[in-house]
Length: 183
Image (cartoon, rainbow, N blue to C red; front, side):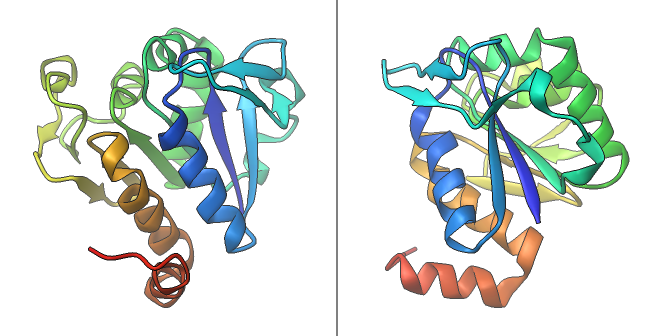
């Protein structure tokens, strides 16, 4: 298993890094991918992270099993405005691979044209930007290969649902036990 987590300046740190941490705990290879030419990316709360590679370094997009789009501002906007990110999202979704987004991140899915008729959620106030979607107000929503979540407080639930999608209920339950998760 191999997943991309995109990082753009202004990303929501807890949303990105919780996913990276939880997936790596289960031996899923995660590439934190900067969309700029620099590996250092600064989040919305001035926490700098060193990405594993830049988008230019990603050679074979077909070797990945999914993509994760964190929220945060202006991170989600920066991702939405990057044509290469949009191409990756379209490719992943077209192959029915994991296409996950949290908080303001679903604007990227909307720009990629993949949410028409899909159940999704986002940070409150973004529903008007998600044209064609069947908007839900639940914390985490899964519609086939598309997983969305509302915001930072749901980063754990979002990451666990990604694990459930990729590895099944048993591994998700094992992760929850290991991290002392309480719903």
